[in-house]
Image (cartoon, rainbow, N blue to C red; front, side, top):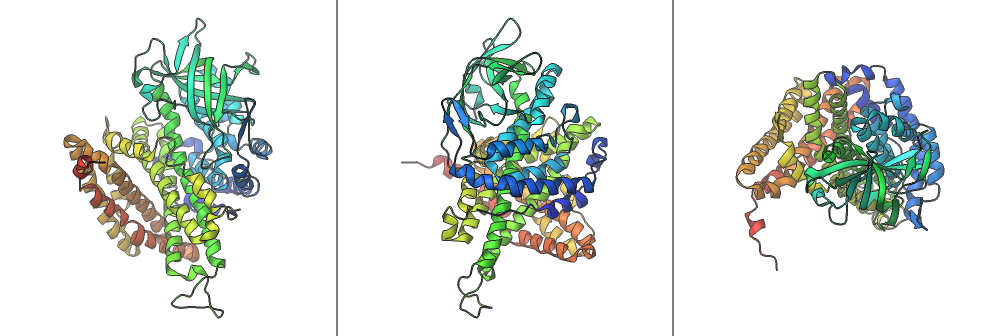
Length: 587
């Protein structure tokens, strides 16, 4: 089984030194969130993830969730762990105190999401969608609905799901068949089938609150006729207690490549009572509140799994002897494999990507809080635009690189990595879902190039480029080699953005063919931007902690020398166009 030590020191470095967003620091509600408080939270989070949740990863993989006589049974130990998890208040960490939450910002909860992803993604998924449901209900539901459902969701006694996909539609939600018939009392009867529903049923919570998209019987076809409904597994009595079973049943559980401890369900809705959330025919707008935040969290899943893969690869490389290096240190015929140049390259590739991603995610967490809470509407909107731009990047890049890192982790472990004993192959299998669910990474790339680069507020990508240009114009002699290198790749991203903009007007096939390349170029440059911010702090504070900052500087150097050049490769590939692709004759 893999071991795991939560990277609390690196997380605290980010919280203490990179909390540099002026607008974020103006938020009154977080003025009392001190470093001491955050450190206490992260240290406690590390304990529960390392000691209680980590062992569940292997248990869930070997004893998957099952459906027995219409009841979903979670793996052994999940119930007891979940009870401890909610008793300690982890489901309430980022929720509003009004509903029983602790009111921590996403700059803190994102760290916890990473730890939980490292420890056991399957276990995490039983509570993750609850937070998404909480956010959606909190933003779009009536006060009556909020007061009825949110306290129990925050407490963890009730959970939540997101029900979009159907047998006839995945990405193209306009094809959905689930219908909603309005009743005389204002409720709706929901009928249809939803598939691939994460945590769609389980035996951990007293009730499950499904957020279901459906079409009212008098609504138009396509996405313009989609509404959002809250449909509880059990109806809720007027006094707030759980009542009789609603018209929802579990048809089956998917047998999957990974995340086997998580119940991925087919749900049948048969005249189930539901309540409309938000405005009629505006369901996708409401659901995107949940989906967009969830996409960032999926990116963090890729980061978390990458971290545990790296930690175990490093430990294995330090204890495994194999072959001689050019500068052998061995007296018995073999060196530790960490002495081999290629192994060191793989490990530094992992480390430089992981730490850069974590820093970028911390930047994005600050922007997210500004977009939700700043009193100035203009500042909120600008932050919201940046979050919108970076959401597909974080979701796709972090999960794609998670596949690369878990693959390299297996390679470092050799044959032992391919066996189940070490647990490395499970990390690869568990992570494989992250580039797929919440919108495949190709869909994310298309969303980025066709919808996110500009909107009614103008060119978002140009605003982002202007921001990072201003923040990387640093007058410090030691950082100049990095900023000079960065300026080169920033110019490539600028040219690439201009190319996309022109091709959108003339040849959309070129844009579609280039979408993944563009996303990765933007992603690698954005991670480099985060590294510049880390380097600035490292050089300025070097004497405070020489060993820590030496590590940061040398890790950043590897990223700039060996990883960032991939951005230019993607650019060169993309601008070759799509004519060969579209004209190719497949036999």
